[in-house]
View 1 (cartoon, rainbow, N blue to C red):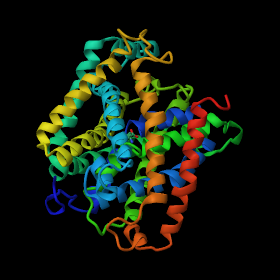
View 2: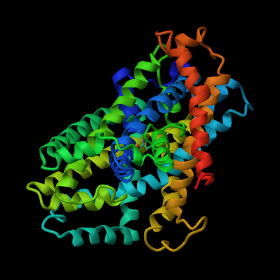
View 3: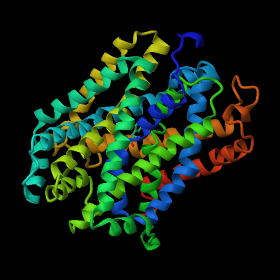
Length: 452
Ligand code: PFF
């Protein structure tokens, strides 16, 4: 086991913020946020989402950073360092390791599609096509098991290639390249959206609240997505927090990360909806929004292939900076708890995630009729398990732990361990003690179908 002095740490605040924001900003922001916003009617949903992020997401993110920073070990080891061997809280760490691993396995499948679309748009494969042809292209891609497994493999190999480089030389270095590039591309697309004739309709859609559309399922989408988009409940932020120096201001860091994540989600919506409206299409067109609607819309625009290329590079970069954080959780566990070398741990976990991801890849073709449980394919089952149960539950236990049981660990002054601003502590603890667990209970009751 590493002692504190030899453990790797981020080079500084910027590196940490970019890496953690990289984890948070992912397919969730660019692929999922716009379509659940579309599905739930826009403005009012955005408001509720912002409330969930601030009242539930932000305090849990601070709690995860705190646990990691005080523990100075991986997600499981940090709980052990704080609570001792054999404590039941270790299960929360284990849950995080499991969640991030399963998530990595199917996330890589969708992320791989962005590689295929980068190739398509770079080689002109999307230009001059009709809407039907573009829709068919997506169908053809997911129907070809060999092709999507190939891209899934390549995506995981890229992820492992970065993680093998370690905290400073791999994750931080690449986050410092991927994130600024991502912001630049997104701003370009946003400007494109604002210049499009649908700009007004897009802005109204995102920001004019229509409260009649705020149904319980919409509230739930907002809350569930808050966990997913901030990478909570998966051990990721605990692990990244464990590479922080002891004197870091967790509030200031978490606010920056949360703001960046929210900004990217909103910009992605503002880049996408205007062009969708300008083309006279519907916003809530489901997960196909990025892979079908966007290429269809861009096919009719000047520089359309170039814009499509930007969208898919953006998507790949966002996915990659998230997947490295998922892989790091298990890798850190093997390094810190089992004394493995980083390279060996990375190759093993990467290969296992690839193997576990194959049933998810086959869920779109060969095994699309294979529904092992609850009438769902493997992909949908894993997604349900992780996004609807493991992340909210993991986040809830982190909240309960930090709110009710954390005794300050090594910190002499609990409040100061969190932020130099003393008023933060009671607010933070109140949100963790009462609001966050109540919110998760609401999600779970609904999953159980209580008011359907
Ligand atoms: N936050 C990522 C996204 O929005 O795509 C997803 C994610 C990454 C969830 C890492 C959980 C995690 F540990």
